[in-house]
Length: 154
Image (cartoon, rainbow, N blue to C red; front, side):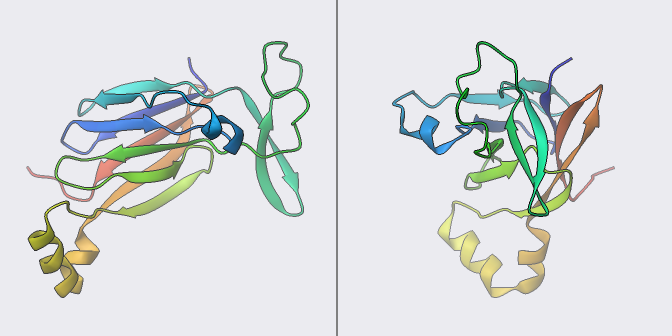
């Protein structure tokens, strides 16, 4: 059982990059780690334990109180951003997919090939079809991010 996990239902192997949780973490010079996730497979994400707090009618994730090894002792008022970046083959990176916000969201797929990109930009129907669905839900007490394709071949 993990607090955050990701499942790939796109039909292809995807790349996953776990983004730093806070701006302070982004300033440190740690190498970026990219993980490959096969189709129909799941993987755990390594985010620190958090609790949801409602402040001024908005939900924020703050470090879980009481953990001695938490690196955010004095910064509990600051919101943490749990997000990942994914890349499907032939498309640009999709950064900032939020892991801590429940619900479904359509993320745009932008081709890396300039000629394909110009064809998609010329036709609104192709532009609307070039999306991937991300869904954040509950799974065994943790949060599961499911990435799925809009199309299914039978």
